[in-house]
Every structure is written in C-alpha cells, then in structure tokens.
Amino acid sequence: METRWATVDGVTLELPADCTVCELRDALYKPDDAALIAVTGDLVSVVHDEDQPLSELVAGCADTYYFRRPDEPERNEILAAPELESVLSEPADERGSAETTFQRPGIDH
Image 1 (cartoon, helix red, strand yellow):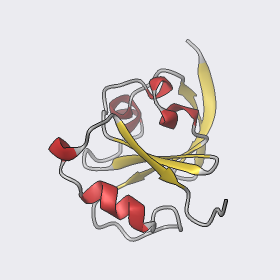
Image 2: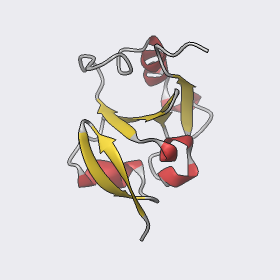
Image 3: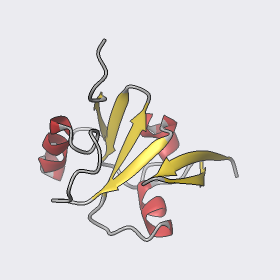
C-alpha cells in the first residue's frame, strides 16, 4: 500500500494514499460532525464526499489537514476564512461536487 506523510491537526502522520475522509476520521478518533479541510499550496479544499478516496481529489495533494467541527473557535487564519464558513454552512444537498476549493487566505496573486 502506497503511503505519504501529511500533518493532521498539527501532528505529522503517514497516511495511506487512497484513504477516505471516513477512514481518516475513524483512525484518528475524530467526531462524525468534523469536516476535513485540506491545504495544498495556495488552495484550501473542503471535502464533501467522505467515501471518495482523497487521491482522486485536490485534497489528496494536501500536506496539511484540519478537522473542524461546527461552531468551533478558529485556530488559525485558514480556519477563520469567511469562504470556509460559507462552504460549511451550505446544505449538503446544494453542494454540486465532491469538494469545494478556494484560494488560501493571505496569498496575493
């Protein structure tokens, strides 16, 4: 099984390349209502399809992940981004894709 290194909530771990959000959440004992936020260079992705392998998504290229629960205090500028709050407040049936990606806060192009 192919693996890669990534940081999840501040801890560096070796992850299976084809793991899903559900598998990662279960392995790390994260609550069921915690959303996976992936940081890939200048992009931030929120994964909606929790059964699709991360390797098939932009989120699969991330080197940093955060699990964020509803109404949780912001831990950094990424988790405080207004775009993130907007994506997380959308009803699940209105999301048209497996993930939503937006530009990382604080990066100017």
